[in-house]
Amino acid sequence: MRSVAWPRKARIVLSLLFLVLTAFLFLDPAQFITVSLIKTITWPQFTPSLLKFLVTGSLAATGFLLFILLTFLFGRLYCSSVCPLGTLQDIISRLVRLIRPRKPLRFARPRNLLRYSILAVVIIAFLAGTSLLVNFLDPYSNFGRIMANIFRPAVLAGNNTLAGILEKQDVFWLTRTPFKGYQIMSIGFASGFLILLTWMAAVRGRLYCNTVCPVGALLGLFSKASLYRISLDKQLCNSCGQCSKVCKAQCIDVKSREIDYSRCVACFNCLDACPSSGVVYRFAFAHKNTASVIQSETGSARRRTLLKAIAAGTALITSKVFAVRITGGEKPTEIPEERTLVASPPGSLGHEHFNLQCTACHLCVSACPTHVLQPSFLHYGLQGVMQPYMDYHSGFCNFECTVCTEVCPTGALLPVFNEQKKTLQLGVAVFIKENCVVYTDETDCGACSEHCPTKAVDMVLYKNGLTIPEVDDTICVGCGACEYACPTRPYRAIFVEGNRIHKEADKPEHETIVLEESGEDFPF
Image 1 (tube, helix red, strand yellow):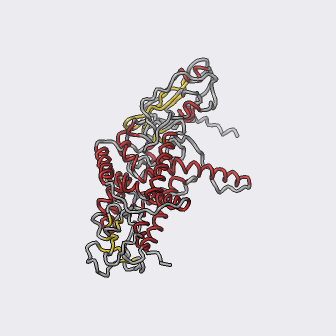
Image 2: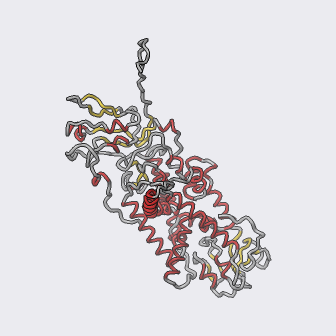
């Protein structure tokens, strides 16, 4: 039995490593992964790295430059080894063929007009100020949405079930993770994309990578000039077609003994498949008969530098309509929350910056400890579909929490320090007196004020000894704790109106209690 060529072994190990690590970022039910490890895993992802570099210009965001260089040297290593969506396609294709054997893949003509047109439209749209097409087509972001919206709920359900079983045995090492607020639009898109991807991978291997994916098209241009590449030795190749059958990119034409390097994803399957050693990996400008090649039989160790449509939206189902009354008034509220702007996450600066830079990968949604970050539908308009927004019916923003700003791989959320977070105004609370149980039921409440971290919502004298909320918008930070705590349904008596551009709130003044000295000893 022939031995597997070492480049293929290295590619398989590396691709599985990145797949597992990247998937775990979105599935981690107990938040075991540290922020520094998250940054390490997301650093080489092409689109997030590029977008973050455009915002920060930092050397810490140059993962995309590394893989442009590696593509010039060795071909599309990013597509074969680092891109989790590429590895997912390979797994899907393999599983489908194990379950239902199909005819082997064979050479297919490139759809250059289609893929380069898509790339051009994506670039033009981004330069025009919208990242909508980037969100829909970026491979890393699509993988993130599949993990966060389809697999994560199942993992959390399994985790919580197992935690419950262990707790009955007095074993508490597994932490329960709450499950909140997943949006129909985002789940629908992720499911539709996964179905489409499964069909494409089952029928044509890496068809998505070489027809639709803008990252694949861009790296394909660089790969045409790669210094080391797969080639067919015209003296040894007998055109048996074995290499073409295992080529997931369908880029090997055995009749002409030519390879379309713009589509080759450097998987190295062909090296091991060739029975005549006619497939070689060598310096592109070496003489055809030189011995400086990596042949499929030998697995030479001399080279050591090889490294790495839209689902239809249905009506948005939110807790605004179907929430269960927690406490408070018996009368249903009648005045809608007339919110004109939702609040964008901390560190986003405002809607314009966030909508342009965010690729809706949902890493921040998975990492948010209070689940206030949820995928949007049309909350930002069409340009912000599936981008996270502050859903104060699902949770609230912890006063000192900055996790989302720390894990964002694209620069859509810039770092925010704890002290800065305490005065960062995402929006302002708006009080609707006619919805408040103090007004409708003439009963005490005060839940909004009790949960307000800055006491921007204060209880003032109303009538008959009752107090009612009053908002000081100068110290309100728009955290949403008041809206989340408000018991009235279906409409809240207080809600947060988002700021289009984030502002700085005043620091709250805390009263100092001064005890008068009486000269007497403490009574007990």
